[in-house]
Amino acid sequence: LAKTTQPISMDSYEGQEVNITCSHNNIATNDYITWYQQFPSQGPRFIIQGYKTKVTNEVASLFIPADRKSSTLSLPRVSLSDTAVYYCLVGDTNAGKSTFGDGTTLTVKP
Amino acid sequence: EAGVAQSPRYKIIEKRQSVAFWCNPISGHATLYWYQQILGQGPKLLIQFQNNGVVDDSQLPKDRFSAERLKGVDSTLKIQPAKLEDSAVYLCASSLGDATYNEQFFGPGTRLTVL
Image (cartoon, rainbow over all chains, first blue to last red; front, side, top):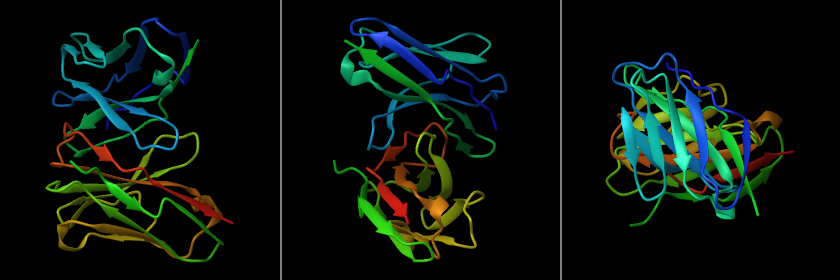
């Protein structure tokens, strides 16, 4: 099962771009990388998923280098409402499951 | 489209009592998950169902926790007897399939306090 490592916390200011990097050195060939966002008193919510290179949607971008041993979630021009915990998951297709770590707490300040 | 429904939203019990949580997944979702989330930690998978069969229950404390998913739709998670360390938020999630690239949709959770 691929283990992920993320920073425990990050601070930013409104309007800035935020990049959260996740390390997953033991990622397997068939594993996908998925990011979830969780606000207080709510369940996690899917943000973005990728396998390689770059993926972009209306919320974020996901950058995955060629060796796939890390990935970076990029949030453009954050606002106060982006304050949340962000989780990086790597799917273990052999075990049929992916595991949540303790995530990165992002605090956006005015 | 309706999301994942859970009830109750909050529950307070004393240790050694029993408690049950209910989850109704998104219609058509074959896979259902129960997670335990302790304050300050990420969600920990307790059990995963594919339709009405168990795919993974390796982290379920089977001496006190039980779960079922009758008819492959709704699910209940039971704790009997509860311990202080069971205080947590219990999250239910569902997905179309059990492949790890399937997006999981989470319910609002049930916050359990054991006194």
